[in-house]
Length: 213
Ligand SMILES: Cc1cc2nc3c(=O)[nH]c(=O)nc-3n(C[C@H](O)[C@H](O)[C@H](O)COP(=O)(O)O)c2cc1C
Image (cartoon, rainbow, N blue to C red; front, side, top):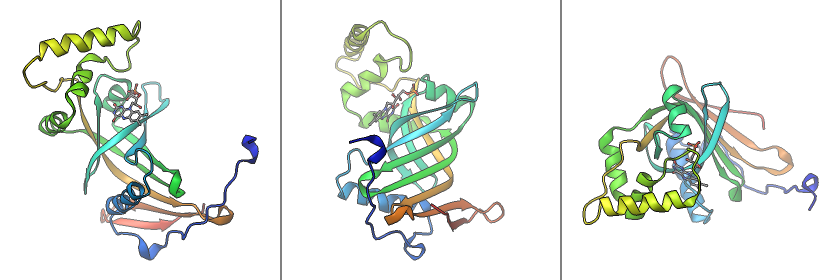
C-alpha cells in the first residue's frame, strides 16, 4: 500500500488520569506487563537516544534488564559509540514503541554507570556464548569481516576454558534516571491521550499533566 495512505484508527479504551499510578516507573511496569501479555515482540526493547561530541543525536535499541524506583537499567559496551557518548554527556532519552497496543512511552533523564558488582551479577546471568561475545566484539569499531569475530570468540573460549567467564572491564550497565516520563495511548480521530510526569523542582514529587496530542 502507498505509504501516504497507510492509516489505522486506534480503537482503544484510552488512558484516564484516574487510572495512572502516581509513580511513572510503576505505570511503565504496568504497561510493560500488558505488552508481555499481548505478546508484543521484545517488549523490553527501548530506543535510547544520546548526544555525540559534535552535539549530534544518535539512537539505538537496547533491552531493559531491570528497574526500580531510581530508573531503568540496560547493558552494553562502555567503549561503544553509546558508551563514549554517555560518558561525555550523561543524558539520554528512551522510547518504548509498543505499537501493537497503540502505545508509546517516552523517557528523558540522566545516566549513571552501574556499580561494578551490579554489572558482574547481570553478566554472570548471561549465557556463556553471550559472555564470550562481550569479549570478542569491539562494539562500534570498524572490522574487516565476520572472521575476526569468530576468531576472537574462539580465542576467548580457549582462554576461559573450564572456568567462569569474567566480565570484561569495558562491559557493564547504565541506570537511566528519569526526569520526564510520557505515556501515549492512541485514540480515534488522532485525539490521543498523552500524560507527562515530571518532577517538581522544589518538592521533587512527580506532577502529572495532560498534553495535547
Ligand atoms: C532488539 C535489539 C536489542 C538490542 N539490545 C542491545 C542491548 O541490550 N545492549 C546493546 O549494547 N546493544 C543492543 N542492541 C544493539 C544496539 O542497537 C546497537 O547496535 C549497539 O549497542 C551499538 O550501538 P552504538 O554503536 O550506538 O554504541 C540491540 C539491538 C536490537 C535490534
